[in-house]
Amino acid sequence: MKLKKTLKNTTDLIITSIILLIVFLIKPLNAKWRTKVGCFFGKFIYFVSKERRKITRDNLQHAFPDKDEKWIEQTSKKCFENLGIVFSEIFWLRDATKEQIFEIAKYNGKELFQNVISRGKGLILLSAHFGNWEIMALSAGLYFDSALTIIVKPQSNKFLDKYINQIRTKFNNKVIDMYHSSFELIKLIKNKGELALLADQSATSEKDIYVDFFGRKALTFDAPAQLALKFDIPILMGFAIRQNDGSYNIDYFELDYSDLKNTPEGVAELTQRHTKVLEDMIRKYPEHWVWLHRRWKHTIE
Image (cartoon, rainbow, N blue to C red; front, side, top):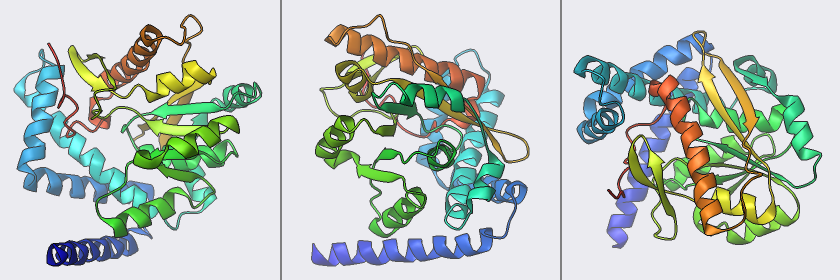
């Protein structure tokens, strides 16, 4: 067991060192060239990852049964390219200045954010693994001049996990491990803080709920809906749409749930609503979402 742990740590350290070398090479590139390098990474991952390639194609075929094989193949490749671009941009963020980040993150809706905060109830910023979610989380704290608390899933590579969290928190945002978040969440809610989280991956606990997602029932985290309904916290949803020049248009809007009560039925309906918003966005930009995740690992007929 000790030898196995040592081997994993050594492997993880080597991988992290390679990534740091890539970071050094990416650092001087502009947005256009970062996108090109990211596309190359994505194509490489697509070529070597047979299992993830299969999951991606299977997910797309179920979600878009009317699309032909050529479309499925092209969209699968674009999905991997998007992931490669996300990787290249995340590591570029390590040394990026505020001015550089504002050059690529174009926001609308500052007045809405200020209006929601003025209510004094706190805020849930809800999004998905769509476009570049890391740029959105980092730039949102800057743009709105408000430190966000981000719920994150830790990486198995502890060196890489530490490095990525350093990037996420470089401008005063905070991170909370999703597996050890209860106490910190309660503290944040009592202080009327701003919580940012992604709720689009497959839930693993039977306490979560199934909702419709692309015509299939998918086990979905109900924590955002539970928190919102129990503590009357406004929900803003936002998505980063990549432009041809490598920048992102980021729009936020408030998710209305004024007609719902804090009941199991209300939680289920609110979870379905934000899931439907995500589905509609993915249908517009299917290559922006991470289809290689086993989103329907848990499903029912």
